[in-house]
Length: 62
Image (cartoon, rainbow, N blue to C red):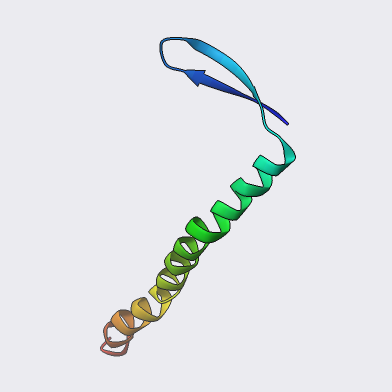
């Protein structure tokens, strides 16, 4: 796979990535980014519940 990268001050270069490199990048994603993204998703999933808890008393006191 070839990718283009902009190297500051030197312009654009084309880099060839081997299949093994692409697999290793995938492993890095799985080990570092995926848990962080999952944690953020879990945290955001409680927002509707919080909104309901805040809105319920307001709506019921009308």
